[in-house]
Length: 634
Image (cartoon, rainbow, N blue to C red; front, side, top):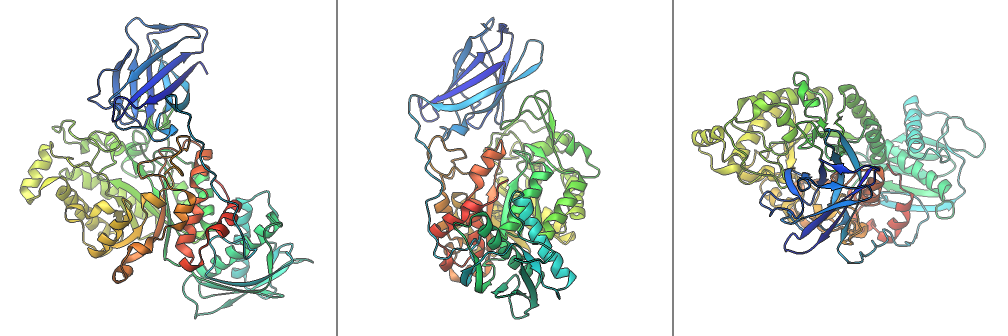
């Protein structure tokens, strides 16, 4: 690297403290006539005092640009240091500092700089605690999530599972698919399934049992293993459990065994067993999404909530609106959408083609997973507004800012073109995603959004609306009508209920702000999925330690805390009929690599999968701690 940026934080002046940034010139030439740009969640606010030894040129959400004093030059091996106060908040973890940086030379060229960790004054940072305890096993069987009922006797491990001679081609293909899942997730492991019987293999037979519940299965272990189920989901669940048992026994024979005799009787606890993935703050290529779907299938999660649009980018093609995947999907130093959250200087256009979307939806279906797409509206729409500037009220000045620092980032409810564009978007989504659920966001609209828009003011007067959230309700009711006309169910975050909300019929809301919100929504008649930031947001740091990666706005959540949390406990008995299930959320502001992803997501994703599947009485943290060490990674 030619340049390196170091950054540190000190707590004075309160409440936000001071960020100190140093640019080191590691080249063999002096550096003059330059600017420094960096991205950081710890932001310098617009009303901040002037920085010390620098000129503050620009901020756009997490993007910052500074210049040195006039005539300043950094000699080879030298450095330039400046200090900025007036921060939006005190950082909580080392990842809250500078995430990426680049130097713009006098020629206009941009050169990426290496970035160090955010340091915290002279404090010696505490080490993060261990993720998992040693654990213990009462039953030596590899299963995540743990089944509802298990009564097994351990025995010898077969070489592989093979189809019984008289099973149907469909059942044989299902067994092969479960084996293929194991091979994709653990390519170096011994194959759990073979289609060619030989000495040492164990046969698997299938039977229909209409008395079993949807998604339930029964495994009887004997000379031939028999799998009973009432439907394809139950058969798939039973086969994945069977393959897990054999994989664990072969990969860790010192810990796990394969059953010789006995029975497993199992069924999912909840119908909605979800996991969300944000591909806007950090774009995950199609091959990574495909592997992630495999991991969800391994844990028997059945909902993939795909967060496809946000301020940082629009990630799918819409016929008739090509600028969404040119302007709206491109970030770079010279573009209308500047780098954010670890982006480099070079422009990158990142989105999924329609063919990639269709292939991933089909792959998910083969795993029993429903793909629920999300466009985040009316807030979180900077990328869409940059791509479609005719959706902006030309007479609305910069007047409000989102919690993430974006100015005027909400679609204007008073512009009819907004609904025309959304009609094309929804048509594109319906053409690709067979799910009846479409998530429309509805979260984090700034409290004073649209109040300086003459068009919105006229709409408020015409419709008798008061304030931002009644305008939002007006907007979302129109969106719900559009979805209903397309035979789709509106799904949204809990703020959809603000300002009068939308009709509760055929509406599903996700309670994320805190566990109590879910019961309040259920009292209003909404069906609810629980996904609280305090327990189920997998971008939250796993301890309060400074060195811990991840976010901290909802506190920290250790794997044990995530495992112990029981969402249903927050619902009074009379409201349980509104409780649809639980969901993990993976927001990617802090995920710059697969290493960060794996560190933050696992083992907590497996813990939430068990909460979604296993009866509360069957959960055991120390047993899970042993099981979770055998988890796949992205």
